[in-house]
View 1 (spheres, helix red, strand yellow):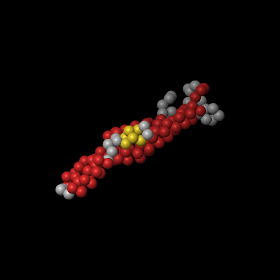
View 2 (cartoon, one colour):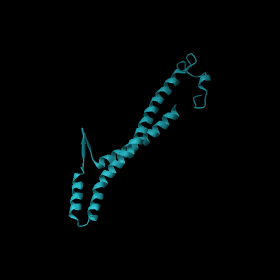
View 3 (cartoon, rainbow, N blue to C red):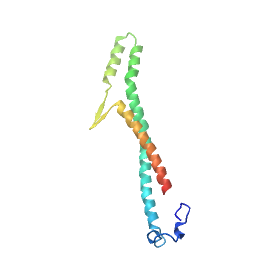
View 4 (cartoon, rainbow, N blue to C red):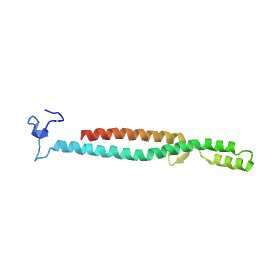
Length: 135
């Protein structure tokens, strides 16, 4: 009988390879060790993704909204030429992309990366649950 409720240690129908060796079930220990490593990796990726995803997402949304906010402030500034010049200078100093090494960062890429990290966190949460139940 090979159900999840059977007592494998007392099951006489098991092959000699799966029997206890010196009181230890070697195949079960190896299986649990492998699943424990996978569980650790899935949970680590999940934790890092859950930490970084909101930061990246908020940074991307803020960066993409900043020119619109400055445009609204420019309309509110009225007819004062010094204020308009200062707002125009600030608006032109906001970059539309930043190159860090070989990576090109844009507001839309940061939003996409934030959503991708959220998807990775959800996937790893699902896989770590499966791994925990399999152990």
